[in-house]
Length: 128
Image 1 (cartoon, rainbow, N blue to C red):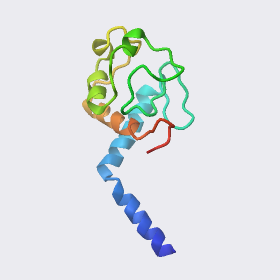
Image 2: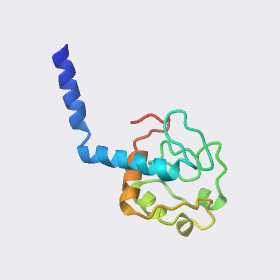
Image 3: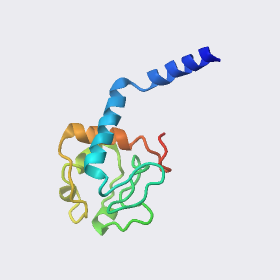
Image 4: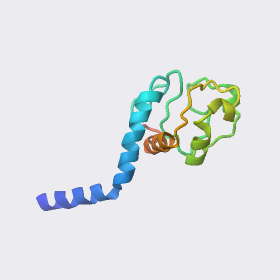
C-alpha cells in the first residue's frame, strides 16, 4: 500500500510541470494584491464589486448570474480565452469603452500568471 502511495505521489507531482505551478502561484499572488477587492474565485465565491471569476475560460463576458454588468461589456462579444484576457487586462476601458472595470494590469508576466491561476477554476469554483 505504501509503495502504491509513493507511485501515485510521483505521478501527481510530475503531472504538473514546475513552471506551471510557479505561474499559478505567482498568479494567485497577483490576484490577491490587485483583484480581490472587486473579484472572488474558488468554492463559495460571491459576486462583489465585480463578478466571480470561476469558469472564466470559455465563458462569454457579461454572463455571470446575479451580477449587474454594464451594457457595453454585455454586448462586447468577448469569450474569455488567454488571448482575449491578454488584450483586455492592460486597458479594459480602451478595449470596451463604457465598462465599469477601471483597474488594469499592464505587466505581461502578471497577466499571464493571472490567467494561469484563474483558468484552473471550473464554474463550480473547484480546481479542475
